[in-house]
Length: 186
Ligand SMILES: Cc1cn([C@H]2C[C@H](O)[C@@H](COP(=O)(O)OP(=O)(O)O[C@H]3O[C@H](C)C(=O)[C@H](O)[C@H]3O)O2)c(=O)[nH]c1=O
Image (cartoon, rainbow, N blue to C red):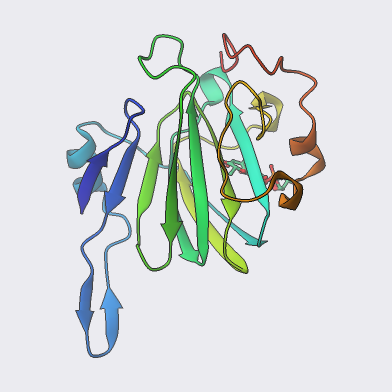
């Protein structure tokens, strides 16, 4: 497993070692010892999630606030997605910045997003199965969100805005001023 830094502080891309042979391939998708050693900290994941989506589905940008904030280790089991993280930590040098990485079932890349980030992805293949680990439990009451097309972020999702398939929740975020990320996740 290799760790690759990103422009967002504490956000990392992980590239597992793939063992290919004439049967196919094998790799360790998660190993606590390896992961914690690479990160240099102890991360206890407590919940695994999985979603299936068709092309153009855009889930995000979501986060849970305060004590319910979640760190996530995300990957794609089938298809390809553009995965996006936004740094909402006011004391971070990358505060208000976003970063995207294409995760596919061919590049085996994983993306670690710490607590304090908004997260989302858009499906670029006909269908995609998205699987991820969280280090805190789901807490609906603490959920918050940013509009995927927030003009102050200007995220390039690699699809046309009109192609995006969104849940009702993701279409409007009247709770949040689009231009002010301060205190958003506290
Ligand atoms: C997240 C979650 C949802 N649910 C229930 C609540 C709804 O009835 C249903 C669908 O939830 P939602 O529309 O919030 O699912 P996504 O749009 O995929 O949300 C996720 O999308 C982005 C990519 C994220 O990073 C978050 O993990 C999460 O917000 O599953 C649960 O029961 N447990 C959960 O942990």
